[in-house]
Every structure is written in structure tokens, then in C-alpha cells.
Image (tube, rainbow, N blue to C red; front, side):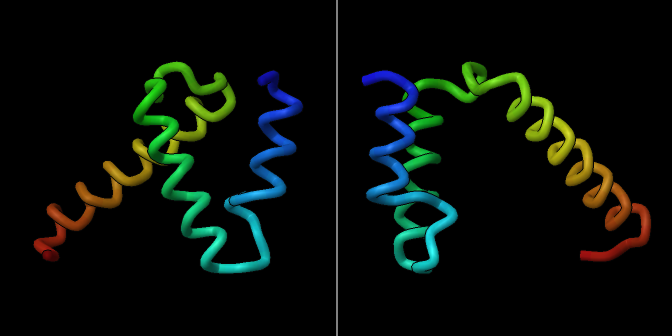
Length: 71
């Protein structure tokens, strides 16, 4: 299966941007399983950079909570 076929199959079955919440949930679960199966290090550069940015933002958010004494 090539990239175009894969996108077509995902769009027809369980896209994470579906209009249906149940379909979104299944799509998110399957996407996370695919990432675990293949390895997140193999994601595209664009996704890895966004993932890193989100990790940094979350780390700062957690550090801010600790500094303020929040739980």
C-alpha cells in the first residue's frame, strides 16, 4: 500500500477528523497504535517538530505548577 492508498483507506474508515465522535476516538486509538508499532521517531519532520514543541510547552506548564505550589 502506498501513501495515497493509505490516506484514502483512513479517510473512508476511521479518520481522526471525522464528523462522528465515535469514529474520531477509534481513529485516534488506531493512530496511536500505529505510532507505537512503527516508532514515533519515524514520524515526518513536521510532526516531530510539533510533537517536540508540545512536549516543551507541557514541560513548562508542569514546571510552572510546581513553582507555584499547585497540584
